[in-house]
Image 1 (cartoon, rainbow, N blue to C red):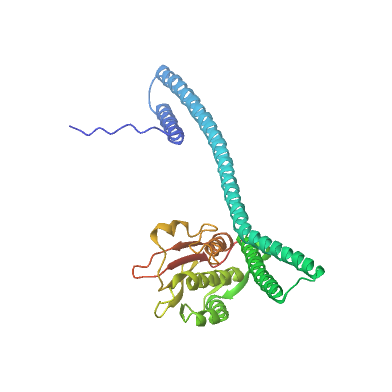
Image 2: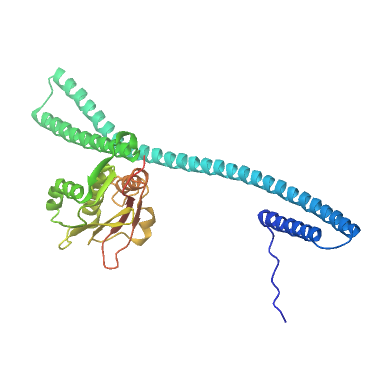
Length: 338
């Protein structure tokens, strides 16, 4: 028993092509009839029949073309609406992300700013009491020493927290990365990375961390060198602050570079404790940190993500090392647009 082939819906393009073939066949038949022997009446009948069929097929062809034009118009309208909806969705997500970012900044700044205000207020109260004691000539040596100690501690507390606010503001400004304050240069990648790491050598030495560079030589790119320098700096800093416990033996960081078609790949890895599986999906979120209250702002990897994706038009991915440690794979084009 033959296998039944299911009907496939005929597209407008296929229908038009089929009608064209039918018309051509009819025209060929007419020409054949005109060239063959036969009575005038038979020839007349054949001609009339063929002309009617040609007219009918022509009408069908025009109808099909009109339907195709209408379908194309509807498709264009749908694509326009889809693009509009997509843009609105992107803007909505941007606004939601910005709202979360602003809320995070306000929350992060509020704590150190509040502490600084409290400490400054305490200094004001102490000065007020000191003046009163001086006026009444009741200021003792012991009370003066207490006053100086309180003023010193409060001043240190105020300064430390204001410095943290300043750092948060600086980090927040770096989150809003854009190309307007960056220039593209033709750079030799291995030299740029080596020079960047040289500036960070005191930090590596302080943490007794070995740096291994396996860089493909002679790779040139026309891109944003400042972005690459900041990415390398952020990743090294992240490893030094989060990757190694004080008791870690022989800490090491490795940076590799290679080329693949029109892209550059940077592989950054360390032999530290790695990133726990339950938090990996959140490491690029702004203000997400496991060192809350210990100086961590949770903006380093978020800034890195923005630099890679927005400035270099590339991708960054965290790839867990089967042995140990953290591993980031970055891919971006030789020629950055913009």
